[in-house]
Length: 114
Image (cartoon, rainbow, N blue to C red; front, side, top):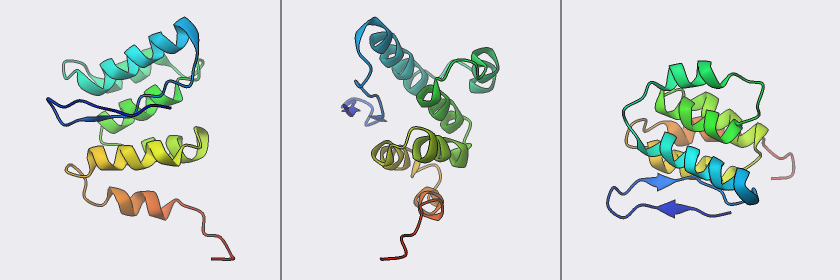
């Protein structure tokens, strides 16, 4: 896994290098595009992508761009099972939604032994 921070914009990327080969390269480029470009409508992209292909990381980014933070965090926590990416996502969107860490904590399971 890799987390990339762009120095010029201060934007934290949640890209992962976990998928090998050409498909991994294409998905990293797509995620970068979705996270950083402003000139597209996330709602239209979600409709075009559909749900047949499991592009959950990409959908989490798109939901974040639509300010549907709970949907993004549900994907990170329960589908992708990647708490680290969920926390990076929260850091990115905290200036937009100061309650985002509360949203993350509200969906975290509580251990009976803690």
